[in-house]
Image (cartoon, rainbow, N blue to C red; front, side, top):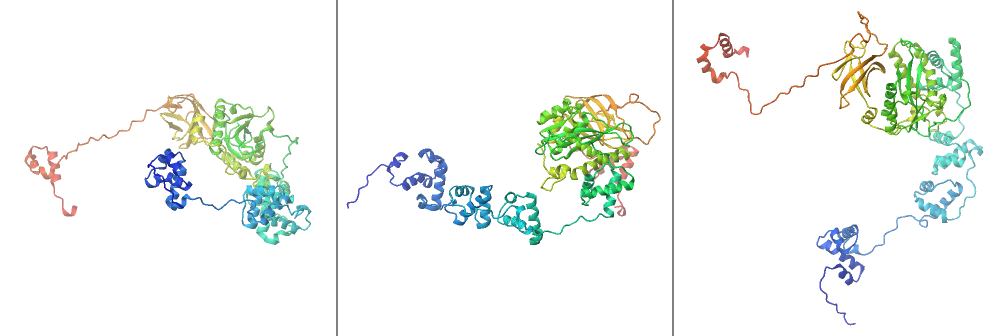
Length: 616
């Protein structure tokens, strides 16, 4: 066969002509890469010439440098994804049998069971494909009847363990055996703890008989808070590690009341249970707030004290609370600020029509944080969740407040109540299956929408400072002296500057308030007026010579400004010369010594006197 003569062509760099001359796909691909590989052109420059993807060209050049000419030829890559035909017949049959036995199975749950049995987990898409066009199920009946229909206690608990060992989830086991999910957890816990012995009926463990300690602890609770019922006594005993049934607590309550001659608390009137309009479906959906009056107390003044509390409706936890002698917008905003700072903002706040909850400052806070303000219907206090909390507070702490004799003792009672209430079990959480029965456990570490403290300060238009009172009960705030309380010398107090007002407070007790005007920077005081002193339980041990009213002595005045700090200015190049140069001026001093004064002459003799060795 005669040899074919090749046509001679002119060399060109035009890609369109080169593309016409190539005979094989591999040759065309090499011509694309040749300027990049041989001459060092970038993939971006070559892409503009030939019109291909820069990323593809860069990847092809990289593979050519690693594999050489072999990278130009197409390779059959092994298929890595599972298909229905690649699975073993046993696994395909198991997939359709599981779906036939329990139709509630989802693809990922079936895949998990396959992994437990075969060590291979198919994808969800593969499971769906096999269920659509797989083999016919071999299972036509249930392997296990419902849990209640299994007569042998060992066998019905063994069914739960067997299904769990096969990879079934606790939810699917409970649905398949038609039993509550908490029973599945109990059986598995007994299996893990006791093995096969835990599957048999355990001997009934009767509650141990109450002893002296239990009777004594219930007696202390009865004397401390006579209004407590059996449920609250049970919760208080659990807090100190004593676990008794509610019925046993009721019997011990009756025994101690009879012993101390106490009458049982009056039962409340029964009402038809109504649907709560502000029932929360999740945490921080609704907060409830209200003020409780505590009239029977021994704190030393006839006026009632007030407890302002914010309750989280879903968890029933008290987020913030304050014991105060007043109930104004200052007190409410302080409690609201404490709750927002620690737990974030809720979706809505529920209250009655109290003015402190609808003041302009509070409404501005709601609007700035995106909080809806909800209001219960008039004369329908039961719609506010915090009302039930106040009833618990009455039973747990009112008897202690009646015995308190000082404000510090009242604050300690309030702190103890808040802690006990949040950590003890609550009736609203008795039916929870996760073991969380107290408000603190249900709340956990969950928070609402969090905001930094600086942002909250800016929204509340308030700034909080800490100062100390002097011997006479005055404090210095900026360039002003303000009176707080002479009965609290050297005590730390809190100063609140809010919307043209200044309040001095000690341990939630308002000492004095002033009307203030701020300068243009909205931080420094320009003028102070209208002082108002609060009636406080603090008294000075030092008796006064004259009883003066608030308008008969000076409660505030402007102090001189602080002296500006003096800075030593240093002049570069300026050196302080020596007053005496004894080494160089001895001759000059000796020559002129006769003209010096007697005092200077004695000083020079003292300076020039040699020092004895023992004095060195």
